[in-house]
Length: 57
Image (cartoon, rainbow, N blue to C red; front, top):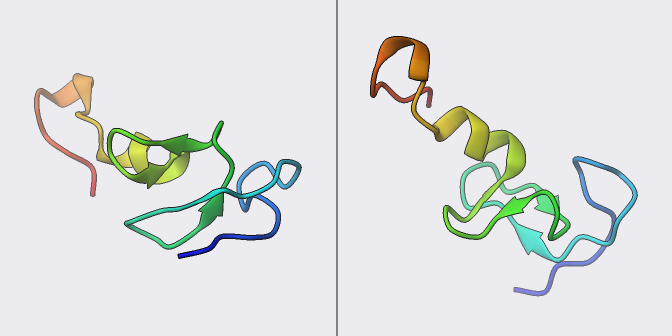
């Protein structure tokens, strides 16, 4: 899929990726390639260290 436009998170850089979770188009800086998620979704999907290994999806 071809991604064009401005990053939906920072609104400054060129969007190069699409989040596999929410579909947002984001720049390389705001994309977690390991997870395939935008920075917002990646943060929500990481373990919540305050409560052990539970995930915040």
